[in-house]
Image 1 (spheres, rainbow, N blue to C red):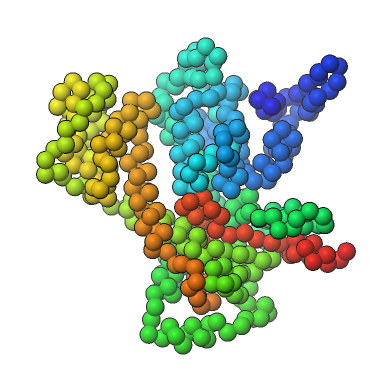
Image 2 (cartoon, rainbow, N blue to C red):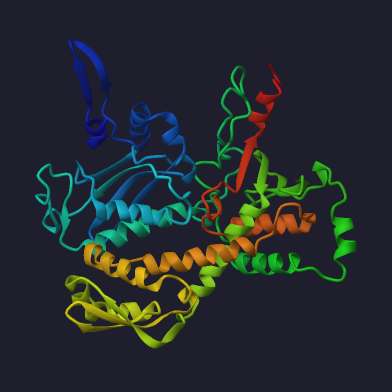
Length: 435
C-alpha cells in the first residue's frame, strides 16, 4: 500500500507466486488518483476526505485529509511522503495533529495521505538508519506551513466555493443499505466537501447582528414566539437561494433543527452548532486584542534542563506576546514573573516546562494557545443554547445563517458533527419510491 501510493502517476503491479495481487494503471489525473487511493484505503476514505493543494515558501503540499468524522482509534491511516519517500516524522505528525486540534475527539487520530515537496538541500534524509525520519534545515517553517495548510482546509466551510445549483448540488452520503437490504439507519455525515459557502459582502455582519438579536429575549418574545412557531407549509418557505443549509421548517424534540434546501432535508444539532459558533467568536475576540498578562506577586522559580534555559533569552519576546514573562536566573533555572490572565489557575509550572521542551524539540510551541483554546471551548459550551429549549423559526434560521459563515461549522468543539443531510433521491430510496 505504501509503495502503490508513492508514485500515483506511475503504473503499479504486484505478483505473488505467479498470480497478480495488485495491478494499478497510471493515475495522472486527480480522479484516477482518487480511484487508486480508494482501492487501497477504501472508498469511504476518499468520500470522507477533503483534497488539499497548497504551495508557499518553496513548499508544496497536496493530498487528502479525512474529515474528523472519519477519525481512527489508532494512527494506522496516516501516510506522509516527503519528495516521494514515505516518512514518519515527529515534527510533521505534530503539525498535522495541530491542524486537527479544534475538530477532533480526544484520543482519536486523523487519517490522511499527504505529499510534501521541498528542495532536497533543505532536508537531511540521513537522520535515521531506516530513513523514515528526517531533519529539516528550517523545521519551524515546515511545521507552520503544514499546520496552517491543514487548518485552512479543515476550516473551508467558511467560503471558498460557489454555492451549488440544483443541477450540481452536493452528493450527500447515502445510508448503508438504503436502496434495499442492510440497515438503513446508519449515521450520516456532512457532504465531504464541506458546506461550500461564500461570504457575501456585509453578510457576516448582518447575520451576526441578527443572530445575537434573535437569541436575546425581548418583552415581545412571547407573542413573536407563538406567531413564528405556527406551522409552515413547504410552499410558504422562502427560496433557499444561496443558503446551503436551507430554511428551517421545524424543531424536533427541542434538540434538532429541521430544514429543507434545494437538495433535500437538513438536520442540525442546535447545541453542537451554537457551541462551534460561540467558540469561533470567542477566539476571534480574544485574537483581536493583546493577550492580557498577570504579574506574579512573587516570581516563581523553576529548575529546567540547561538546553531549555539556553533558549529563554532567545524566545522571551515571543513568550511575552502570549502573556508570559520569563527570566533566566542561572545555568538551569528560570523565574516565571507573569502569566496569561486566562491561565492564572492552571498548573503554570508544568505548562512552562512543556512549552520550553516544545521549543527545544520543535523550534516553537502552541501549548499556551491550546490551553487558552480549551478554556474558551469550555466557556463556549456553557454559553451555548441547550437541548430542550424551544426556538422560533426566526431563531432557527438565524442559527443556520450563522453556521454558513462560521469556520469549521461542520463539527462542534469536541469533534461531533453539527449537521447531516438526506438528498431527495436518498429519501426516495428509503421509501422505495419509483421501485
